Length: 189
Image (cartoon, rainbow, N blue to C red; front, side, top):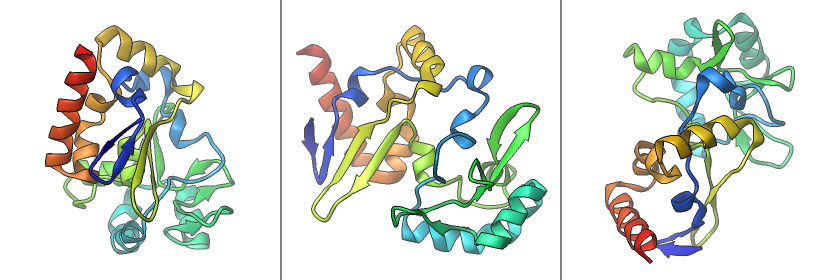
């Protein structure tokens, strides 16, 4: 672990390699698990605002779940998250054949909304836990991502480089530039 500003970072994000391999996993992270995607309070307001624009991209099951539960929910642990369809798929998930995709991101890609998706989804496999004085930045190892780890190793892409855009979105350009310096020092030590 090392500190960068008000973040405590696991060295795993520098050492582990990762590149999403949708052709292998079929977007399993959007349909597996026991909770929706983690959200922050600002994101709950964004979801409420953009839902009418995103709704045409969603499946009828997702629309039904959102209209029954809301655009976001409070999970059993008290955290804010996206609603689920029958405690499985994220309500915002859509399918391209057998591959799960994000309906919000599809609306973003078509210029309908200007918000890509929840930052927790964008950051994956990094998970951020906010505390009063700092944020913990950790690599989340999940067996459904074994193919992503293999592809990352083959392409020699460390986790922090794979999620560069998301890290900049969450922590800013200056923070990321400092992270790159630390990564280079770590690599050469």
